[in-house]
Picture 1 (cartoon, rainbow, N blue to C red):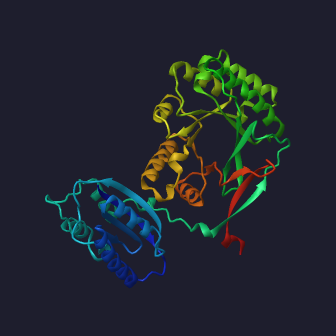
Picture 2: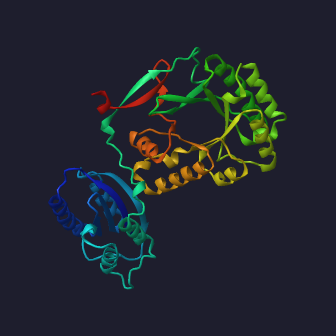
Picture 3: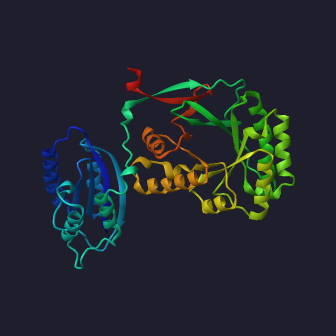
Length: 391
């Protein structure tokens, strides 16, 4: 199938203009042989390129481009299928937009079209061209340092009591730049139950979690636990039971965050909302986890506004090079900023993922990049440091 791919990247410092011209000539020859056509825009700092051809050929060319050291911060903005090529005259053609007035440049792109009908900027792919030429999104071009500029130092979490991770797993939520642990998520290992016992087991598992937390948590620290929404609906006096567990564990309600997964089914929104009101009235904070992975995220925000939203790792995975995920996460951040809801990014495994999300305005993170267990089942957290700061 005919595939269209668009990406944006940042030219590497020290790359001469002649080197760019030579690169385009070489790319044109290669692309012609592979049946790939395209247009490359350059504004002196960023490249913006459209590639068209068979899906396999376009992917092969893009993989080669991604390995080129003459540019970095490569972000795939668009990849879709089309019945015809928009630009079929050349394997690669360079347009230096600095040499044209904005209107002239927009017209110049359209003039290179090879479709039977005249190209217009109502075409979704071409709207990316217009956005780049008009520079309306440059504030979202996060220029990330190379991951080689960072090194990570691990330190053991000084718990007064150590538990077996097979019984209760601990996942810290951290602010990496401040080198601060915001909270500890406690995940009890609940044995599989039949449907009648599931919700009761869900709430009783919090008793051991709170008891354990009461042994090590400091006054300024918080803990979070996940709870099935239906547990609040199906288990009588569920909120009161949770508060009893908190009191008997020498914790304060204000130290507790109850998180509900967006993917979980809520059978009775009215009863669930009433229970959430009780939790909040008692001083317990509420969070939505797995945000973006389910179907009710915006509906949950509309019905009850949590103190925190935890973005699911499906949206943060490789976000530094995925324009679609970037746009979605930026929208979540913007929405939560308007509602004064803190955003936490979960499942972070790569420095580049963290750097992009930090640049986007997130300071709370959870994932293997920042915490884990060693061979002795001792919990540790890992902090980023710049090599330049240590010199």
